[in-house]
Length: 116
Length: 116
Image (tube, rainbow over all chains, first blue to last red; front, side, top):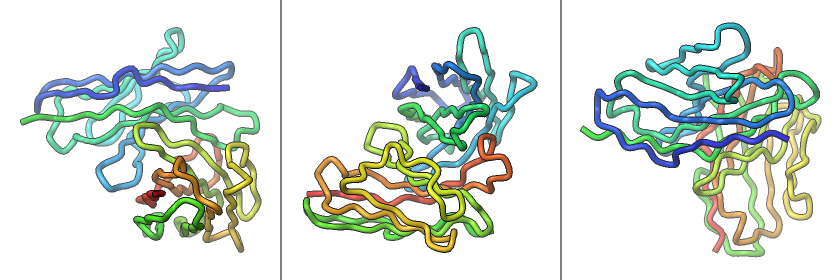
């Protein structure tokens, strides 16, 4: 079984400040890792994903995440946030192989609020 | 390219009533997912179709929930009878399925169900 823990339910930050949203996962097999963003009244949208190769992954809107296998973490970062980044962010994992057919296991979500 | 469409966007029913949700995935996407997102939690997979066959329904409460995907395109999710704890947002997603575990899932805006 897999699980995902997002360590902060809410993160308030001022505009142009850096931000880190933390994600830890637990799995007995190799995983693929994803970050999705959900803006109010919209569906989830993929920010970035780690499949293999470089552990630093760059995504849309200036976000990046680093896969740390030893710490089973996949933290999301942005060096300077905008008001428009206010949203809920979800970390997710899927099995890298096997018969899970792409099933995603999501964390509980982190609400990022950017203040002017 | 049109996104994943869902209807209705909102639904309010009383407990023990029936309700149905409809999803139209992105054209050509073979895999379709239904997720349940309870307030304050991440989405939880209910059922996954590959074309019109079910590949994972392990978390679907089969005594009250049913889903079908006729002709491998549109899908409907039904709850009969509804319980208070079914209040949630029901998300539909689709993926191209070239390699399912690594695929990006594209989400619709969701249907918000309130059971009174």
